Image 1 (cartoon, rainbow, N blue to C red):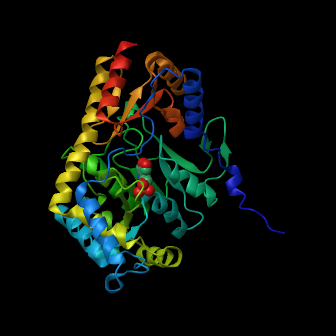
Image 2 (image 1 turned 45 degrees about the vertical axis):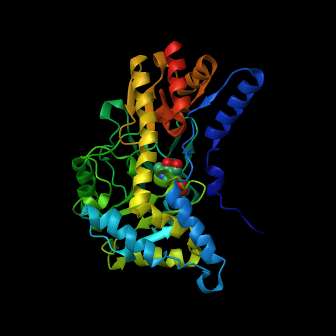
Length: 404
Ligand SMILES: Cc1ncc(COP(=O)(O)O)c(C=O)c1O
């Protein structure tokens, strides 16, 4: 008789966004005259820029002609795109990353979730608290997290690194020895980042204890501060201890188009075994390549015209971030993030819990955000707003909050 993977039964329900959805629709039904502003979810709202649309149209035309038709893409990605990524995202920043260390995929979420497969079952993971849930859940599904304590919201076999206002939302080196360390920089949900010096401490620690840093740089395009590296490979020593995930979702509006990539340096080894070979094996077995159309569209991200248009798009969202940051500050809130990331992390009003504040803000300002406690116990008492709305609705949301 078949049996299911019991590890799935240990997972807590993914209540966060469904609970938010239910609360918002109940409120909207009871108050049809109210205009609700949604600054909760991390999805983009601006359309694809013209350079990308044009590149995609050209690729569609190629696919419609026998001479230029493309079937299955190479599973590691087309050479033209990997060369461009290696040159412009890495070598231009002084990182020695070559095209064959880049694996193109359908997005960072899949890669962040799948990477754990190539590591031993008994590896211990360390994560920030609060955290993007994919890192923990994917390891829990694989049976690496132990038991879930529903009261405390913690797994028994996970090393948590609390990130709070007291430590500037920067994870501190853990007392215990992790094997896999997940870092998300710039961070979702806190919107904060790590400087070169802070990241160097992590790279040295990982090399010293023989751990791997799984570095999620999905929000790299939003970095404004020169002290914040755009890639972990800008740090000396990272080639022997890090894997980096990137996404085209937030820098180019590809949340619905789907494309990302993962960098696995060939120097990352366990004994004599290069991790690169294992990820290549996994990718080749379980992934059949990202679409030609999408990889061609991504080439426009690196053209002069595309770069200029995307710079404006990122600036549009970051102007929203500034509006939120300044609006909340002048309304008397403690506010964090929003400088190197499209997320603003705030302390709730007068010590309310994250969910109390959610209800209060919905009721009093008709503004929707995300309760910080949904990202982990250290998020309790905090709240996340995103800069991905329109400028007009962002300004209006801040006016309403100021007027409460
Ligand atoms: C930290 C982080 N990593 C990865 C992703 C997913 O990226 P993608 O759209 O490329 O799957 C997200 C999406 O919100 C994210 O916040």
